[in-house]
Image (tube, rainbow, N blue to C red):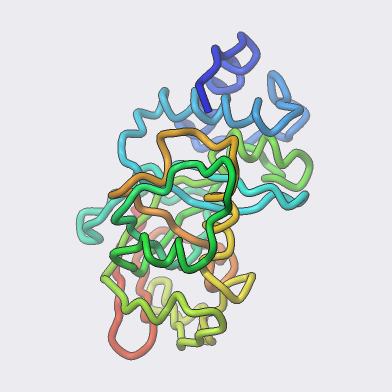
Length: 255
């Protein structure tokens, strides 16, 4: 999909969202300077916001709108070294533990055929344990306007990539114990479970979106695939520790 020129309203909303993120401030949806009424408008605002934030790593999150439309947003800041992660805690920030995949080949838009799940799995070279930090400058998140939430990068405020996992974690219905500590207090201790039971569901849906931008789903891209634990509120700054299965551990801090 070829980029279009942003309108003044789209640029103004991108600047407003950037200021809210910078100041760790939230406002009600009704106080946004403009409202993207269509998903393509929201994606353009997201593109402008990403430029303002200096997003430069091909790392993305995939999700699905309430209407079933596949959507994507860049992960920023993105850290592949947990000990060097520099993400600031803020009120109402939430933690989502996820599985991220790395593509070893391009997944170009297919005009006449669709990608099957096996096609997507064949394009994956590595799988990683990851932690997404979620916070939006929009007080209600996406509950009032999902398009506005898409514009605000689907609430992504940072991502920490952890150790490599075996490809078996991608199998539909696979179950692994997941334990999460916040400042040494256990806040989650249950089986890791993707909302669709299959971590590749939303990536498959997005790969088959014929209007998606050309710059995504290229070889070398990292795509995180959805929370395995819901969204856990992090009420104070401090240490985050994650264990998936018996051996895979991710540790970092929110300052």
